[in-house]
Amino acid sequence: MEGSSIPGWVLELLKSAGYRRLLPIQEKAFPIIYRGLNALVVAPTGSGKTEAALVPLLARMKDRGVPRGGGVKIVYVTPLRALNRDLGGRVERLAGLFGYTVQVRHGDTVQSLRRRFLERPPDIVIITPESLALLLTVRRAKEVLKHARAVVVDEIHEIMESKRGVELFLNMEKLELMAGMRLQRVGLSATVSKHSLSRAASLLGSGRHVSMVIDTSPKEYDVEVVVVSDEGRFWDNSVRAIAEIVKKEGGSVLVLLTQGPRWRRWPTPSPGSLVRRCRHITAASPAMLGSVSRGISRAVG
Image 1 (cartoon, rainbow, N blue to C red):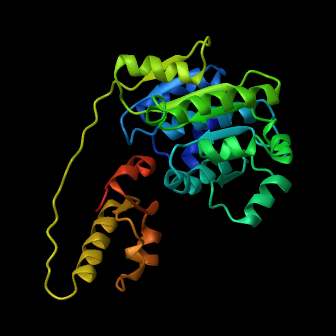
Image 2 (cartoon, one colour; image 1 turned 135 degrees about the vertical axis):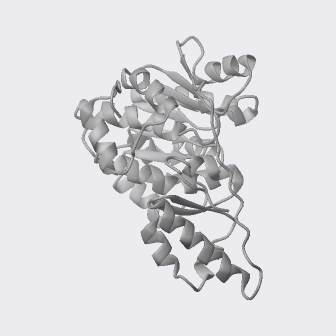
């Protein structure tokens, strides 16, 4: 991470968590978001946009001595409930580096977690537009949300042309009125047309300056096809092949492209032994691959 514009203490913190290097969009976005500017971060799926938004926001909070607890400081809005769940652990680990807490909130959140949100508010809430709209009607929840300093809208291209996008914009304005200050707004988008960029920026806030942070770096992939014998038990043979790949990679990220946690039923070698050899293990659909792709040296499906 030599020659980076990111403060040394942040780099050391990330390095201790296994971030061997920052991706181009993360390097590009950091100084803009760290200064408190509104930004639209545009990059292909799997480019590390979540970290590009959250690392500078968390570093800015830490630098300014914002204490842990007391209310939500960052509202992270995602259009899909499944994406909320997928992001939860990842964002929690990242926020934990800076000493902050996270909670996922959606329509299926159990009652005990809803109570905890009000009694011991997280510093970051990951939430759908609909759940945010609902919380803004609850008196105690409004007390928690009035401490907000920033709003991140993930996958903004998915909602910018819809009624959901309009309603989210209105609710961001309500949130700002409650906070009594201008909130920093950060949008995350896949690569879209110039017209769509303008629409996405306007959703973040009409009449506000929004800095465009666009990833222009090429992405390179090295694809290797490993044929697994179908003799005997196919899943046993598959997991053995995956284990060999993980051993050779040493700290790779294992991504299972499946809708269900089928790997938990694989008998040999044990899933635990694979987890210990991997930096991260998850079950994801191809659409969710981007949300877990930071630092992937080998993806296995």
